[in-house]
Amino acid sequence: MIKLTQILGITAEEYGDYKVHLATGGSDKMRPYKKLLLGQEEFTEWQECQTNKNFGRKYVISLAYMDRDKWMFAGVYKVLSVPPKQIERGGWTGWKYETRLADVQKDLIGRAVIYFHRNFRHSYLNLEMMPSDGGMPPRDMYLASLLENKVSVRDFPGFDKVELDYELLRTIVKEGISSWKTALSNVKGVYLITDAHTGRQYVGSAYGEECIWQRWAAYAESGHGGNVELKRLLSERGKEYAENFRFSILEVCNMNLGNDYIIERETHWKNILMSRRFGLNDN
Image (cartoon, rainbow, N blue to C red; front, side, top):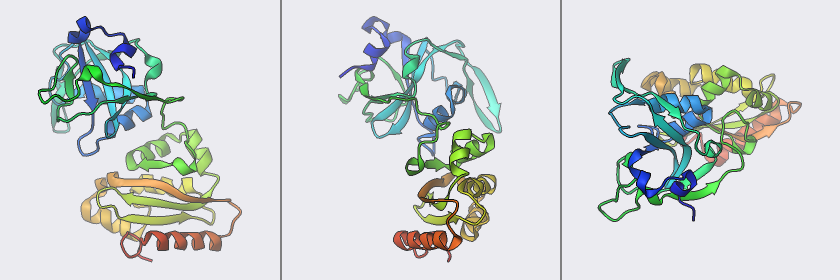
């Protein structure tokens, strides 16, 4: 078991220089992780805007929430502005830090998965802190696994591993990220949209002259892609409700296959997932 402090070369005498940021979003706990998927600059910009004066030390060890007890290493940052500047954006008031990514194990950013069991709510931890209930201290967090390649939304993961929320889909379409556009522009198929707030599902398909890329680009633009039930849902709850939508692929088909086959497969998945009875399909 290799501790993160060992990996970063931090001695006990230096603990007082470090703050650990357990980065989670508000309504979306994985928002910081998704920012990291989009690139280091995206994550840095997100992290530098804080609701309170949270970074009162020389360095910040940044960890983005992935799953229960699993955190992705997002880098060590040197804090350049103490105190930070107060800012206001669209009615939100907070503090803007200036930071610089330190040249410490940068090759592990987006690759090193760190284990840390947090049984308290705090997200900004002094490295030397000892939980009063005897829980795991930050200095004992350790390397759970090391990915061969850095996580990035810019690399198409394969049709069986596609899992996108609406924000990532919009970014991919807006930037026309080539790996995704090339893959999704050459297949028809059946896809799934899940409302992460309610669990209800919509099964859709791309056929005729339409590939999955073209179909999903319509969702990225409007949120509903012209679907009756999704359109009604956004009309009732507001366009921003589309942020709850998650996109995945159930089945891909050759572009030469006829419409009838793909529609038949779409019907099959609607029956399997019961998306007419319990989901968002109306036919």
